[in-house]
Image (cartoon, rainbow, N blue to C red):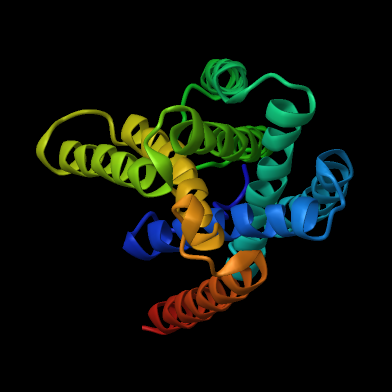
Length: 247
């Protein structure tokens, strides 16, 4: 048994999740495209960063907000370049890439449930469960990029249209959480997956030129703004958690 090292699932959690996944989209594009590193090299570098951050998370004995969100950010950034490598460099396309990643994610969640008899993210007590959790997050964030790009480009909805569609689906999930008896764990994983394409489409909306339906903030400016917002939220939740523990 290990102490639970995951945050409470609250409104602040979802705000930081969306912020981190959006930052992952803009930061991944900054490295692979703006700095012209390329999808393959960017993926290798960012997967290395993910493994380093994950090692720290697995070694600690308690929930540390800064470390936890650093790993989330690493999965999101690596997921962006991995998806782009599959869809663009390998030529799989957004639809085929999304289908492959959905299949992988379902397999991971199935193996996790078969092994641990639960997909809970609020009461993970084993090292194996924690590993499944982070692997699922990595692939859900990779899936989100492919799905978000599919909605923004291939579906004809555009960046804003894709974000509006995902927002509407998320609203249905929230309503189901409060007004139905559908499993909260099931709804959590739907929401967790969907917030990644929301972040992907929102990130594109921030960075792309006005001619392409974006707001033209660029990858550098958008990444800086999102990083500051995320750090402010992490500091706030860390302080709030410490204050709660003293009571």
